[in-house]
Image (tube, rainbow, N blue to C red; front, side, top):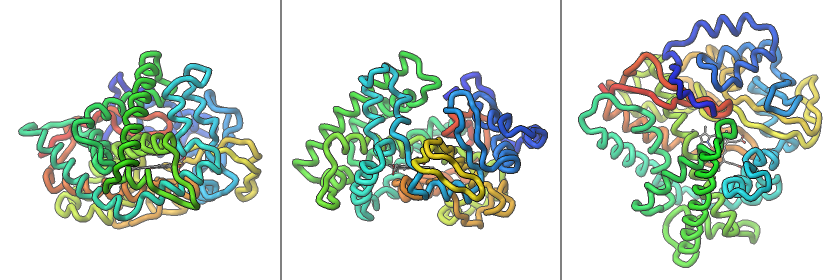
Length: 430
Ligand code: HEM
């Protein structure tokens, strides 16, 4: 991540300049370079639109990616590859975090144990077991837990009218909600929050300094020890929480091993944290850009429930995921050879005009299909949790602060060329 520490704001207005620049480009490679440039500020979607027009199935030559990585920007193609048994998450993906070069780093070892990066058969086995633990009963408390955390965070603001929506609300919210769902004791929350921050910072190889890596390794060791103890406790003394459900989940005579459970708990914390906080930030920015939609939600916070799919479609947090083609993949007349890397551009697919009329407009009545949670074998396991958290968090926000509005001309953006969301978003609670 090239964090925008230089503080260059992205305008809260739709950026007409990028529309013009994108329309003037005729080389798909040049368009892609702008999309992937983590330091560029400005609009992203005009470039996806241009790439889709010029080369919807684009074989790229981009610095930092293996030559011949394919970029897909049409909903139909992204959906087809996400659902294809021939396209898998490549376990070698995790090697970008082998900072020590010999596989010894605690951060790397934790990441390579995450189900997302296991080979196909292990992935499917672990996923089936984790899915078993996500019973309606084990996740039902999340809505109330999130609403309570949202209320506590707004209480903590006190008399201040201006807050940083990210630091004061969206960043702590999903992590605390998940920790409470997992049954993590309150007095451990601060430590886990610090670990989660350090762990996430080490996840971006582009910005990982030796200090960030060292902190990431310590965080991984800390999380390993903490969740190891939680595992042992819940194995001996089952409780009514999601950790117990994970520890005891069984499928086909299988159970998760201790290390697998720990890696899954760390993945749940990570996969469910910045994804959700970024989405909440993007949703509020989208609403600021569409004042009528904002005022409808402010007047009727319950509308957030039917509007969730549109908020997820409009500006998602996980913009791009990679797949490895195990076998040749046919997309219309194009054949993607076995061994190729394929970038699924979910953000672009969500704005494909073949799927949605006026895709650049946030339309709360749309209830659209979208690819923000991917599809197929890696379909987001936390999708129901994410929806619940978005609904509970925004419901409380609009009930408590119906007059919320931007407190500056712009905001500081974070764009890792995979994950997108605000880093700082000053708002007035009205
Ligand atoms: C708005 C918030 C979220 C978004 C946009 C999102 C998006 C995604 C996407 C796109 C994937 C597929 C990754 C790929 O294509 O390789 C994924 C996977 C995953 N997500 Fe989410 N996610 C969100 C929230 C959550 C939450 C709250 C949790 C759990 C607490 C969660 C847990 C997971 C897990 C465990 C996987 C891995 C699934 C597998 O490997 O089979 N996510 N998510």
